[in-house]
Length: 66
Image 1 (tube, rainbow, N blue to C red):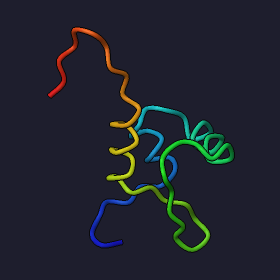
Image 2 (cartoon, one colour; image 1 turned 180 degrees about the vertical axis):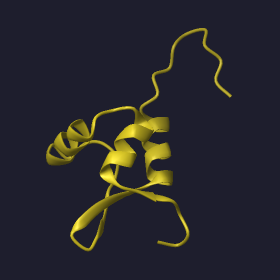
Image 3 (cartoon, helix red, strand yellow; image 1 turned 30 degrees about the vertical axis):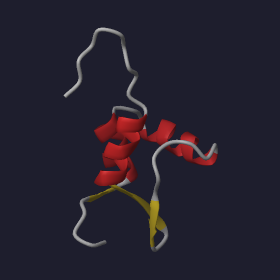
């Protein structure tokens, strides 16, 4: 996959701080980070997980983000 780090469902869930079951539930609801198929398995690109976290970071007044 073009040299990008790819994580399993368990690894991806740990990376974004949720349970693997939550990640699976989100997929069934068509929400959450983008997954890619690798044969019969689902995988998550680290870049897609980072983008998902960036898009879902709550902005708070008075908090300075780099």
